[in-house]
Image (spheres, rainbow, N blue to C red):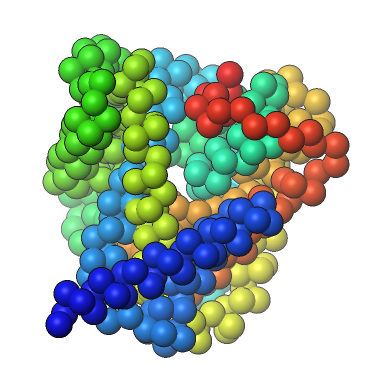
Length: 391
């Protein structure tokens, strides 16, 4: 009976995720690398390949990305976002140059072509907002001088994705310069329009969505987010970026309540997303790219630390604070896998997905470990909301 097999496979996968999550939290590091390993174990060529549940997991993975970015957007107001952009634009430009270059240049050196290089550059460019936010919360670095600088870098990176993702998607579909330019203009223009609407009408939307019923609030926000994400895809904007902007538009009581009701749902589907990426990579292909992934991890780790150092210095942080900022930014995760997933689906190069998977495995683990190795860290546990806002 197919439905029985589907339920059995899903149940086993989710129980496996629960086990690796428990293990990760026991030792105080991000579970993302273990989720990826779980995906490798149940994918083609893995230890126990799944068959029936793969289509369901694919849909769940897309929802997972949307919820990840929605929750990130809920941590910012539109005013905070625009203020961060104005203040941190120079650091954002430095971040783009320093951290896009390692992946882009490596792909060119390997002879993979400029299109594959464009994707690998994106993989190395963007830090993991989810991992960074959790580290700030767990380590009690809420009130640190460098924390706003770190968050500003993350916001700019997410907005760069609003142009990068539709541009690369248009390149994969083919077309001349005029079509590419039009796609990017529509994508960026739509993002700016949504942001402007959030500034002007965000409070009205929040009042309309708010409900004392958790069930009503959950259904309302998820429904609106999926609609906007679908519209964003039609306009050649990433669905994830559309969800991020929905999160920004919500504020006040609606945003505060939404974080509580959406967090468990996000955690479930985000784990499914990481598993799905692992499903699409042949484990036997990773050893042959492990050396390149380590070199890329070292170089891009250094460039991220330098980015954080410069950003925190502009905020007046002491050398220790600048180092903390840099180490927080090391981790790569969700967006790097989104970009790599596009490249794998387009079959740009057979080793690109394997290299990206190995790289994210290394960086998702290295970031939290590097942060925790800093001496003199006093652990506190503030609220996750305050952690992300830097209050």
